[in-house]
Image: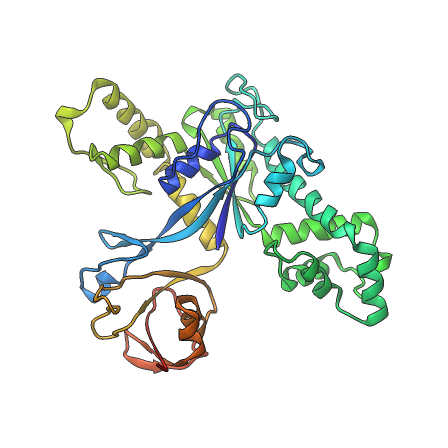
Length: 397
């Protein structure tokens, strides 16, 4: 699974990415700082089973902090998008191509209204951030429309002559974009197009199809970034986005807090509504003022910096659950003796055998049975997993 960090230039995408991944993408106050896509790992928050089992876990592929497990998910920060990107404007073609594998998007919007539609700096409050919401969707929709139209006449004719399902043929054409047959079939039902006669569909109907497919295959969370600097009249515009999940964020504040935490100046857990200064004597007046600003203008006002919340909400939108594979269901350990070592994100509805394949192909190929470590009951290959399950997989040698 992969989350895409998207938006026009200069809105804080790379700052968001760095804060969320502890990466080091270049940050600057001019358009197209990001040219090559930055890739990293973000973490979602889930209750760690260590509390339920009353054990001290030793995580391997994830992190645990006071009973909260931070589970990894891949992220990509792509080049900034500008109007008419689907026509190749700016770095549009590269931007859209980099987004192929993203399963959900976090759209970073400058809530302070201090970047124009091209991503150039302008006075605070002089640009309406709501303009950016639809333009991103439009660019992705037209990009998909262009891909579909390249071979549309041939596909439509072949579907009619050979009796092949048009949704299946489109899935093949859109392979590599994370678009599935069910996304297309659902879109066709909504638009009520005649599947037996795709050659009769107008360009506008195909464009509608592309738009529905985009919405279902690339769901969007909106990060209303720079919220601490935004005028109240612009922050109030969040209420107009009733069809979206909108989260006020301050990527700069999160980055400052995570950097201070790394240096052990403060104790801070991502997603928290507060922090504790550890080295008061070593904190300069400038640092104190900066930390006080974050506490009063961000944490107290919004409950968090919003960065972790965006990641958590994106995973909810994708309907993913977390499961914990172990080798020994009694001691909750792997071969190395690590307790509750790994945490995996899987789609809701996944089975015990799906988890086996997720851990290793050989485990899936030689799957015999699994054991639910909470109940110690044997479960079969088609057993549907629940969020937070701890599962031991038994396979042939």
